[in-house]
Amino acid sequence: MNNDNSGQIEIFLELLLDQLNIIIAVLSRPVVQQQIYAFISILLISWILFKGIKRFLRQRYPSIDQLPSESLMIGNHRLVALYHLLTPTLVLVFLYISISWFANQGLPNSLLQELMKLIWLWIFYRFLIALLYARFGEALRPYKNRIMTPIFIFLVAYQILSILPGSIVLVDANIFFGEISVSVRNLLVAVILLYIFSVAAWVVEQAMVHTLPGLLHTDQRVIESVAILVRYSLLGIGGLISLGMLGLDFTSLAIVAGGLSVGIGIGLQEYVANFVSGLVILFEQTVRPGDVVEVDGEISQVEKINLRATTVRNRANEEFIIPNSN
Image (cartoon, rainbow, N blue to C red; front, side):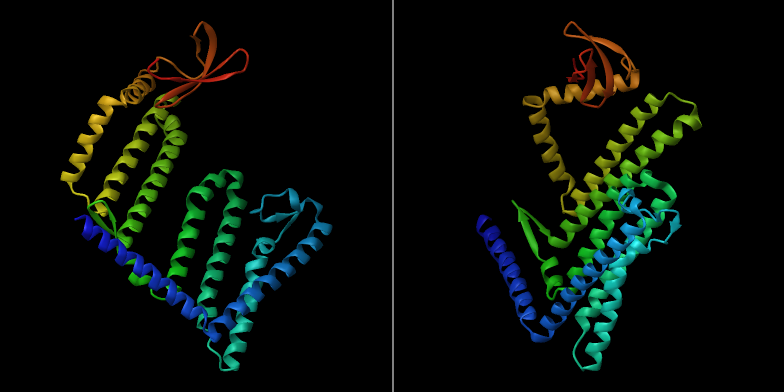
């Protein structure tokens, strides 16, 4: 079995080497190099022009550097995101000119056309961010960091993979984790699914914390406790589905669970005790944020209660993290 795994690993490494050789061979073609040089020149020219326009706008609107990078507003004028769309717009215009020139000269321009899709994606992303920031302000930032930017990066990576020759063969290749064989495609899908569930769990938690207390007229801390459990439940479901995408059956999961139970019995007793104690504290509300408690003979105030530990601050403004089992 080990010999089989070694052989499969060698096959995968050969596929990687073949992919690299294909890319090098494509890049060595003069027609491809011409398009790459043209695109790099377009980026440099657009960046230089943007710097010049930015300097002009800074002189006319001194407050521009104090605004969020995604803001639509400059002074008292609404420029409809023109300032922050300027660089990708310049790149797009120069790309159109370059493609037309290549076509008139009878030169291939397919790579430039593929790169244009990336620029359109860049423009749409920047415009959407600017539009949402104009509506929601800084409240949008966590959603941008957790949702919109990762989606943009994924789409860019997908587009780049679609451009690279031979990437389909590489995605369908298998990699091995011990005796488990997983295709690169399934591994990527599993990672994406896990990320989707983690984002969904965070969104559901935020929605529950911000909407349910007013609708149900319930204590905020009780809603936060339920939201935390819902979040971890969704993460657990996402983890199981992701493992299923990797080809793990229930027998394998049972073996893993058995190993975990042994690990818990030997080395994770304290962690499990803290977790269970955290659930008890959150549901029974025996200790709440803002309560004054005595820790090691010192008076402290509870600041935050998590599933594993509670954060308190003493009179000397020192912060301590106390395991929930204590």
